[in-house]
Amino acid sequence: MNHKGTQIIETKRLILRKFKVSDAQQMFDNWANDSEVTKYLTWPSHGNIEVTKELLSDWVQNYQNNSYYNWCIEFKETAQAIGSIGAVKVLEYINSVSIGYCISKEYWSKGIMTEALGAIIKFFFDEVDVNRISATHDTNNPASGRVMAKCGMKYEGTFVQAACNQQGICDIAVYGLVKRDYTGF
Image (tube, rainbow, N blue to C red; front, side, top):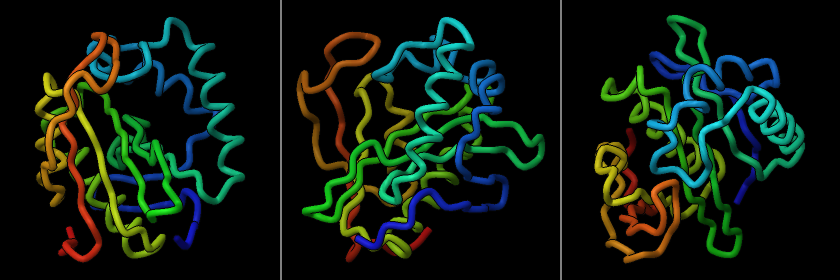
């Protein structure tokens, strides 16, 4: 892989950029404290803004590593931080990344996450030269799978009781895309 770190990526409606500690209030207000947003995630909603600030401090420090990929999703129209997307796992030995994401429920079902994921997929294939991109979702959250499918990722199967999130042990649907099958977004 040709690691480049978290680079600014611009789409029609979004700026994908590094987080700043100053994003804490928007992150807390827009998604991190919302139990409906975190329902199918591995981390609980933040009980107070101090949790968000501490997490962002860690993320900002991690940007020194050029194999760390974690973007703030900023909505251009409002200049608001509305979500996050990034590589939750980087497997060097097979040139693979696994993607995770979440977004404010105010922006659900508007194609925002599809736009962000499509841009990240393009970046990883074209710039970082990964061979495989994968993502998973709790089978009780099919909307996340629709985002993956719209970006060209293929359903590869369901792992039964293979993960744990805020709902407990869960089944996860696995999606993947390899570079040879990538047709652009």
